[in-house]
Image (cartoon, rainbow over all chains, first blue to last red; front, side, top):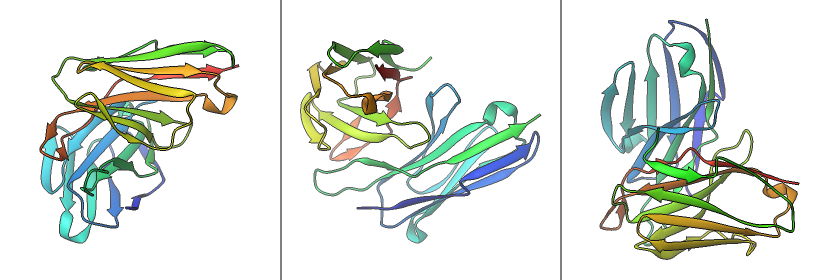
Length: 111
Length: 115
């Protein structure tokens, strides 16, 4: 099956710093999503971005499908950005489509 | 607040009990999913329903029994669970565009503890 690798596994920042999270995947995909899971377990959909670049406030994401990676940028980080960021991909495989998650990047933003 | 509503938020049950988890969405999505998430791990797919029919069962033990009574509701019936089944259970839904799924939207989950 498709492999999804995220880096770094852990990241500690001071409030106000910028960061880049990376997601590599082993095969072509037709769906890529970035999620933020907060400390209470809520899984929030950040971006649906199988290719191209999108921005939403302080967050932006870029997926280069031909090179099989995606990047999530967080600018001017805040303590509320803490949590785990997951990348998840889905590949059309003739009726067996499913979202495969990476292991996540745990982000801690200190005041 | 999320557009996918799960109840209850917390559930503690004994190994001999029977309980059900419920999930509801009113976004007109025709695909619904159950995931299991253990601590410090990513969510793992359990079941997928497409147009109210079970399309994927990821070899889940029969003590977990899904049900999709209509396009807005998804249940997960639990019976004779084991302590290792303690986890966060997440429900999600998405639109179906041909055979390609649109973004999945998750509920807040049910945190299940088996005594």
